[in-house]
Length: 225
Image: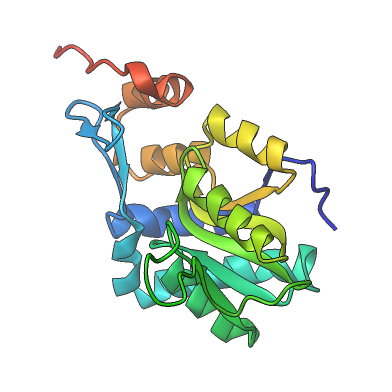
């Protein structure tokens, strides 16, 4: 069993690289160092992740489901359900729950203001054990808030599983503080190394992308040469 005080856990490198290749080919992850994207936080970013595009690629979806399935079978064989963090994690949680023949729930960003005023929808049984599925982890805010919502229902959250992670320090701190480990199928460094091997980025882009990850709030567009 994985130690709950560990932060990140890795999949086999061949799994990481296969999924990273799929993400880049599907343009679910796009790298644009010279013309950065603007995140909702206002950060300038040379990388943008839109894992909703994965839904259109059945082979890539299958790689992802198998990756999650392997983590659960090896580290959390006794879980009772799969929970998707809204909105990006919901579809992948559904694929995984179907594969494992397990009940599923999903967690809204906030409780509904009408009806039963639920935040956790679907299977939510006190005393059960679940994992949270997220498509991408940046600071981990939405995924760990989903975990807290499940805990408020009396559910033990064993881990947060994601397809890709930026591996920011803020995420590491959140995982350590919550004692809920984070697993990702594709670490940031693997994505960058794979992009370099595929010719998606140049040699000089690699160090720039790694520096951005260390200080994402102060990215400067490289000067034209």
